[in-house]
Structure formats: structure tokens, C-alpha cells
Length: 129
Length: 292
Image 1: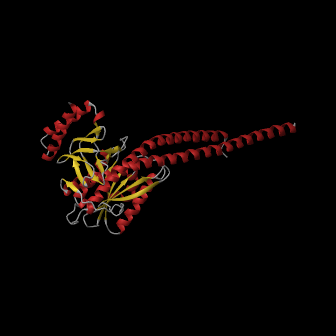
Image 2: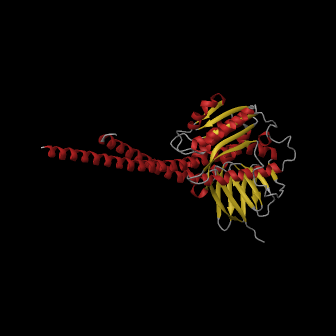
Image 3: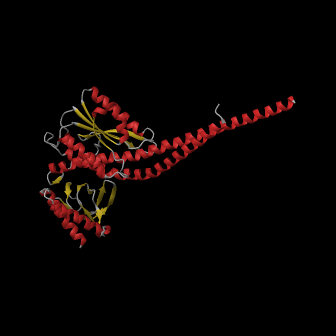
């Protein structure tokens, strides 16, 4: 039995990644979620976090939002914010962090937004370490 | 018969026009490559997005309670037409083809006694449409100062569409744009985006997945549908951008060739009349010498 399935990360302007993987961890809206092959069909959202793709080598992507579909051993991640951690400069991390923090200070931010932004800040802090 | 000087001036002016059209063709060709690339790269996203929506639609059991963006308001009275065109001219039939298609649709909608609202994107389309249908235009967008189209622009248009929908301003929304097939062929298209057109999509994958949703299905649809609208608009914008450059390249290529033909013709005329004047002078000299 093969334990491999396909992962695709697609942004509106290009296909960022298409490859085989043994295991993928995604930051779903309601918590971290690990996906192996033959997972049941699934549709979910992403919150800010890190996508980890495991094959022989490990790849990590930072995302802010997105939609995930899994069917027929094909994991599809639609997002406009995916950034490969391997070439994610520190300056832009700090930039995003500052923006996120200022958003949290605003009074008109809703609770739902706060929830999302707090995850964003946590993830960014983790990256910048 | 124009004088030699006049002909000379005309040849010169046609030649410089030719230079301009040639340069424009080259610029269009360079831009085309980029635009085509991004149009092709953008296709998977919108396609997959449509697929997800389709799969979601299949799993809806209760159409009455489904989100209105997906199934429509159930009425068919008010139409919103979004016409996507270029901001610049000199690109052959590109803008007129879209407008022609749009106008036939407008006529049909109006003749059926339905309400029509128009949003134009791109100034050229607005110019063509306002002559006849100016009073129906409720909003116009122009991204003239933007060098590259990004998702933000599409989102702007998408949000406008959705806010109009939420205000109950229309039941159906159709977008008009040029589909980029290849450099020579661009096909003007009308695509209905609200309610989502499901019958045109592949019926092939009939496997009835029972998806696991996280969070609830309604919540997913609520977030996904507006995103889908923007995605479709973005796709249309990208296709349009590629089509515009392709169309301009062909148009400018034709213009360069025409200018070349014209220069040839004028040069023949010029040489003929030069020859004629030489012959005339010779005759005058000879007949003058004979009379002596």
C-alpha cells in the first residue's frame, strides 16, 4: 500500500507547489490537523499558521488564510498568502508582525478577527525566533 | 496629381507611422508573454475553486435554505452586467467585440422587460457603452494607473458586486470578458457568476463524496462564495489582459504591414512622376533645340 498522496498549493497567480507527500499538517480554523493518505473527503478553512509537508525532506509554508479540500488522495490548498519559510526574510516577518499588532490595538476589531490576528502574531513570533 | 514634394512628405509620414506601429507591436509582444503566463498560471486556482463550489453544491440537500449567492434569489427580474474591457485603445476589435456581445445581451434583457444595471471596468468599454446605455451604468472602475493587475483590484470589483447583491439590487449577475485562446483568437464571453452556473461544469466526477466540514458547511459557504466571485472576476481580468496584448499585437502587425504596402505604392507613384517630369523636360529641351 502506498502511503503517498498529492499536495497542491495554489495561489491566484501561480501554482506554488505540487508534489507527493507522506504527511501534511495544516493550521485549520479549529486547530492543527494532520493529514495522511486515505483521509476522508474534507473541506475546511485555514487560520494563520504553518503548513508542514513531510516527505523525505520537510517543507514549511506560512499562510494567513485559505481553503483546503481533500478528496481522492489529493490535497488542495487554495491560498493567496503562502510563503515558503526557506526564503521568508526577517524584515518582512517583522513588518507583518507590526501590522498585526496594530490591528489588535484598534477598537473596531471584532472578536473573530482578534482570534485570527492573535494566531497570526503567534506564528510570526515563532518564525522570527 | 500630387507634386513630387507632396509625395515625398507623405512617404516620410507613412514611414514614421510604420515605425510607431512596429514599436507598439514589439511592446505588445513583450507584454503579451507576461500576461499570458499569468493568465495560464491563474487558471488552476479559479478552476479548483469552481470545483469545490460544485462539490459543495451537490451536497446541499435543502436548496431553500442554501445561501442566496449560490442558488440565486429565485427570481429573474433584475440583471447586473459587468463589462470588462481595456483602458487603452489601438488593439483591433478587442474592446468592440466585448461591447458588441454585451449590447446584444442588454437588448435582450431590456426587450424582456427586465431591469438592467451595468458596471464597467476599463475606460474604453465605458466610452462605448455610455452612448447608448449610459443611464444604466451605475458604477465604473478603471485600473489605468495600475501596471499589473493583482488580486486586490479584482477583490474591489467583487466586493462591490456582493454589496449590491446584499442590497437586493439584482437577481442575476453576468460578466463579459475576452477569453484568451491564443494570440490570434480571443473569444468574447458572457459568464453568469450569480447564481453560480453549475450546469456548465463537468458532470463527470459523479462520485458523491460526503465531505467532512470543519467548521459548519454554512460557514464555509459563506466565506467561500464571496471569495469565488472575486476569483472569477480576477480570472476574467487576467484573461482580458492577455487578450488585450494579443489583440494589440495582431492589430499592430497588420498596421505595420499596411504601412509597408502604402510606402511601396507611394514610392512607385513618386518614381513615376519623377520620371514623367524628366521626360517632359527632355522633350522641352529637344523641341526647343529643333526650332532653332
